[in-house]
Amino acid sequence: MNDLNSSSSRPADVGPTITSKVGVLGSGLMGHGITYVTALAGIDVVMTDATQENADKGLARIKSILEDGLKRGLVSPEKIDQTLDRITSTDDYRKLDNCDLIIEAVFEDRELKSKVTGQAESFMDPDGVFASNTSTIPITSLAKKSSRPESFIGMHFFSPVHKMKLVEIIKGEKTSPETLAKVFDFVLKIKKSPIVVNDSRGFYTSRVFDRYICEGMALLAEGNNPQAIEAAGKQAGYPVGPLAVIDEINIGLAAHIRDQTWRDLETEGKECPTGPWDLVIDFMTKEAKRTGRAGGGGFYEYPENEKKYLWPDLEKHFPPSENQVSQDEMMDRFYFAQAVETIRCYEEGVLTSVADANIGSILGWGFPSFKGGTLQFVKDYGIVPFRDRAQELAEKYGNHFTPPKLLLDMAESGETF
Image (cartoon, rainbow, N blue to C red; front, side, top):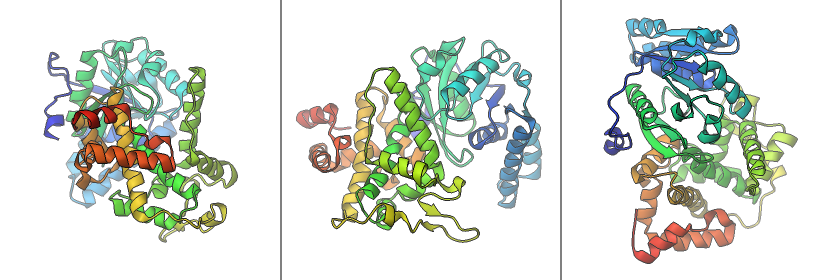
């Protein structure tokens, strides 16, 4: 944490920057959260949406967060008034004039993001920075729709924004050091912890976090008891089980992002990765029509004013196997799936810092803090024993556990993270 917050990932030759006026495109789940933390930090912010009604709904959510903070003694009535006075909620993009930082937080759709980028750039400060709050779409490809790709960057916030401390900053191929410095300083100003990564599909956090929920769905597809899967996730130290997590994120959104990824890879002439989790996603979205909590139910049922419980029909559609995986084996699959993918990110240069990997995994999605982060887990396990166990898991459960070349080389040379 000290390494991160001491700006070790910030360009050293760029002086301190100040952000005066921020524009946030979108007032939904992410947009209103980004607006809230920006205004709370003392910065004027314009929150836009397609209609004034939608923008006002976002403002109402911000007021609700502030009122909750007042009840808990976290903010004063004066602080609430000051925060709200800094926010303009509108459907008029002309009010984005003079914004020196714009953060796009619309739905995870390439065409929609491209459309709002062009609209906003025509009004913002010509020397300002444009950031996309995308969780998966490569920044370099989004920057192609920008008139100033050197001033385009990724800022991946986590939900709920007002509680989650991490912001993943993603550099595109043409992102300038000045752009990176400005966004880095802004993240510190709003009291978040920044990690800096290079561009890649899914970047670091989404790519590695995805392995947890995919492994949970793979275990379900294999016929393991869903209650045991969830219990193993919590026993491993994750905040909630993998099936509960995907219900909160929305299975339909996961399907949309996956399909967008497949389309992009096909366009690039690349192979589309698949696994047993895809069968589960397709069944839940296309046949069962259960997309998660927001859709009324997914892997869980959500009775009003009662505790959620696993959907009783799960075992009918995913019949129990005679060979149930042990809890320890499930826990290993969760840890190793994420750790192996982290090593791949490090090998590919997406990650350039062990500290970014470890802190990003703990603050970003709740990798068990007592393990010290994904790469610390590998180091503590031992490079050679980790390699051997990963190979064993790959032979039993699939290539996503296959030890990357970097790990094999480190095992031979005696290096560690």
